[in-house]
Image 1 (tube, rainbow, N blue to C red):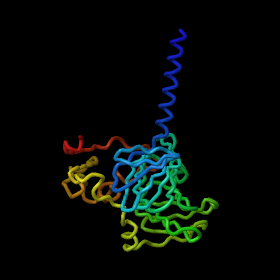
Image 2: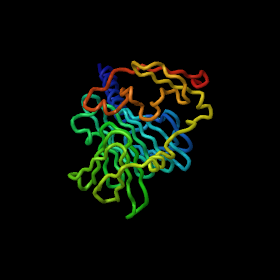
Image 3: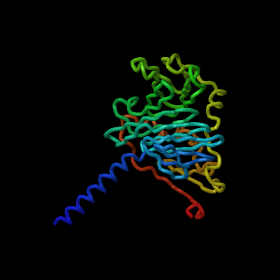
Image 4: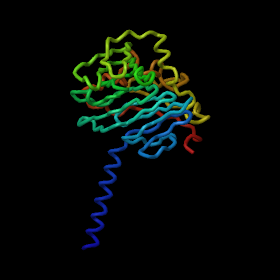
Amino acid sequence: MKIIKSWAGLSLLVLVATAASAQDWAGKITELEGQVSIVRGAQTMPVKMNSTVLAGDQIVTAANSRVKIWFRDQSVITLAEKSSFKVEALEYNPGVNRKSIFRLVSGKAKAMVSGWFGPNPEQQYQIKALSTVAGVRGCEFIIQVNGEGVDASALFATTGGTILLWDVNHPETKVSLPANFFLEVLNGQIPGIPKEMTEELLKLLNHGLFLTNGSRSDRDSLIFEIVPPDLPIPGEDGFGLPPGLGSGLSNENNNYFNPQDLIFQEPPGFTIITLRINESDLK
């Protein structure tokens, strides 16, 4: 009986450890170019395709490098070169609770955020940059940290949806930043008045955020076709996506992928996904 109890205790310990490990799991590396690393505690390790990202990790991109991370809270973050991005916390249980706290330490990042939100979405998903906090609902936006020291600033620009901005020391003063507007905030200052975004600024902000070849020379031979309900199977348009779905995964005829549609709702059911993959990609 003592032996049986010992094995039972060991099994319970394994289950507890597994649960803790699963809770820390935050995301996966889905695309990368160049040299990207993860700082985890005292360790720095190179990133590979499908590398796991944990809560507490800091992802760093070198010069001429970029990376895309899919998080289990249904958000996607793309980092440009010379960027540093930290996962401060991530808890996601659809319909129950959500806590996603990130920080852009330096460089530039693009975020596409969807998933389940509760009654206080700006408290549930936040990306910090310097002293400014972006409280996010479902939207698409870009953050860039400029300068250093007293001249450092954080620029926020939304391309879809709305975010709330506030200084970490003045949470009572929030500024709404709607789609196609931007706002640059000096470190330690309260956000001011948003300005309308120009095409030139949008081009400049998007520069360096698109991954061209993935992490392998044969990346172009890997074709993904995403087929939302009620849409015809897409033809090959160079990206394997229906026209208009390459940016933000939504168009005027299809709002299924629009993050705004997911606010205050349970996540939708399964999406029909067709994957056409060359055999060589599975080796």
